[in-house]
Length: 623
Image (cartoon, rainbow, N blue to C red; front, side, top):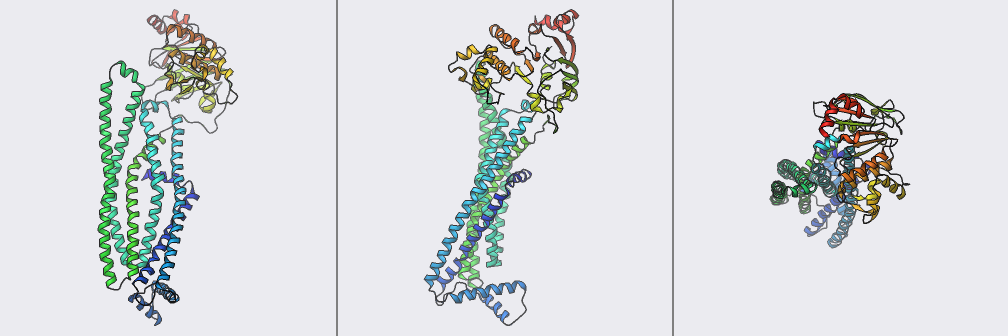
C-alpha cells in the first residue's frame, strides 16, 4: 500500500485533469441513474390497466401522506419523503392526458438522450485519466534514469544488467498497462457502484441491505486472491530478471561460451530458469483468472436470491412492479462494475511488486552529491593535489587507499604503477568523483573538488582506458561523443582522427566516418577502438588526461600506433597514466609506486631503479 500511495502522488500532479475526470465520472453515473429511474414509470405504465401513472405510490407511502394531511408530527426524514411523494402525485396528475404509448415513447427518448450524454462523458474521461496514468509512469522512468546517472559505480558493479533493465522496462510496462487500460475503467466503476447504491437506498433500505450483504461476498475472495497473487507476482518478476540476465550474458559472452564449448551448460541453466518462470507465471495467471470465475458464480447466486427477495416485497405491497424491476436492473448493472473492480485489485496485486521494484531502484542511495552553491571552473591553472586521501568502497571495511598524498603540477605527466589491487584505478576514479573519498581532500588549484559542480569538474577530464566503450552508431558519432555544440564540423573530427592515427583505417571503412559500428564497437579491432577513443579525447581538448592502461591489450604494431598518438595528445596537458608495462612510463615526469593502497615510492625511472625498492622489483619481474 505504501508504494500504491506513492504512485498516487504522481497521479495527483495533474489536479485539473483529475478533477475533470472526477466530474465526468460523477455526471456520467448520475445520467445512468436518470436513465435507469426512467424505467420505473415505464414498467408502472405497462403494468397499469386503467389510469396512467408515472410513479406508483405504495400503501405505506399513502399512509404517510395521510398523516401529513392530518397534521401529525413527523420526523425531518419523513417530511422530506412526503414532499417527494407530493411531487410524484403532481407529475402523475399532469400526464393523465397522455396515453401509455406516448408516455413510454417520451421516456425512451429521455433514456436514449441520457445514454448518449453518458457515453460522451465516459469517453472524455478515458482521455483525461489515461494521459494522467501514462504521464505518471513517464515521470517515474525519467526519475529512475536521472537517479541512475548519479549512482556510484559500485551499484552497477553489484547489480546485474538484466535486473536493472527488467525494472525499468518490464516493470514499467506492467504499470503502464495498469494505468492506461485498467485505471480509468475502475475509476468509472467505483463511481457507478457508489452512486447506484445510493439510488438503491432511495428505492428501499431493504434493497440496499441485501445489496451490501451481496457486495461483501465479493470482497472476501478478493482479499484472499489479492494476497496470494502479490506474493507469487513478486517471485515471478525476480525470475523474469534472472531470465534477462541469462540472455544478456549469452549475448555479451558468446565468444567465450563457444570457445570453451559451454553451449550445453548454458542451455541447461537457461532451461532451468525458464521452467521456474513458467511455473511461477502459470500460478500467477491461474490465481488471477480464478477470482473472476469464482465471482461470476457468486453473481448468479446473488441474482437468484435478489429475484426471490424482490418478488416477496412486490407480493406484500412494499415495492411496485416498476421499482422492483428497476432495482433489479440497477443491482444487476452494478454487479459488472463490482466484478471489474475485483479484477482490478487482482491486477493491482500482480502489479504492485513491479511498483515496489521500480521505487526501490529510484530510492538507491546517491553517494556522490553536488552542493547547491557549487563552483564552476574551466581551466587548471596550477596543480592537482591529493592530500591524505583515504577511501573504502561502499559496504566494505578494508581501505583501498590509505593516506595517499601527492601533487601534479600543470602540464606534468604522472605515472601510477603497482601490482593489481594496489589502488591505481581507484586514484583516477576519485578525481572525476565517480566515488567520494572518506577522508582527506582532493583539490584543483586549491579548490576542493567536492565544492565544484560535477559537470564543471568532469568537463576538465578526458579518459582513455583499456576497456573502450563505443556506442552503437557511426564512427563520427563516437568520436564526437561529448561535443554537443552545433558548430562541430567533419573537418575537426578528421583532424582529431589524424592525430590519433585513426584517419587511414576510417577512410578505408565502407562508409568512411559514417560507417556503423556494432554495439560496444564489436565490428572493429581493439587497436582501432583505442584510436577512436584517443580521437575522442583529442576532440574534447580537455586540460586533464587520464590514461588507464591504454596500450595493455594491443599487439606490437597497434601499440606503436597508439603510443605515437598518445604522445601527441599528452602535449600541454596534465596527464595521469596507469602503467601496465614499466617500459611505457620511463620518460614521465614522476612515477608513484603503490602497494596495498599506499604510496611507497616517488621519483623518476632512474631514481627509483637506483633505490632498489619496490619499483626496482617490479621492473625486474616485468622486464
